[in-house]
Amino acid sequence: MPNSEHAKIYTLTDGSKWTARQVAIKLDINQSTMYARLQKGMRDVKELAKKPSQGCRRTHAGYSPPKLSKAVEIDIKTRNAYCPISRLFMTMA
Image 1 (cartoon, helix red, strand yellow):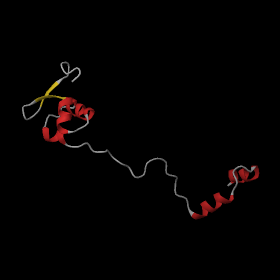
Image 2 (spheres, one colour; image 1 turned 180 degrees about the vertical axis):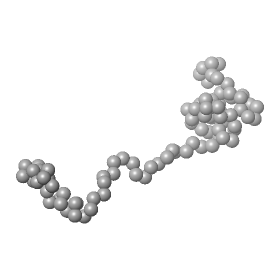
Image 3 (cartoon, helix red, strand yellow; image 1 turned 60 degrees about the vertical axis):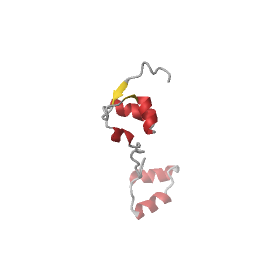
């Protein structure tokens, strides 16, 4: 292993001493995930062995336009914002 002599060694709850890379290989977890867990102070082998979750998936992400009444939707569709006369009427309403 490259730089294994300089790697930080963590003592787990079962009394074993491992580097983050060794624990990641042993438990089949991504090395960066394992390093982050160990840096947070997690030392319980059962907690370290849990597969990472994919995070929160929001169903409604991004911009959602406001709900308009049917009358307003019809009025918007009949107007032409690029026509100067129609634009004038829109400012007067």
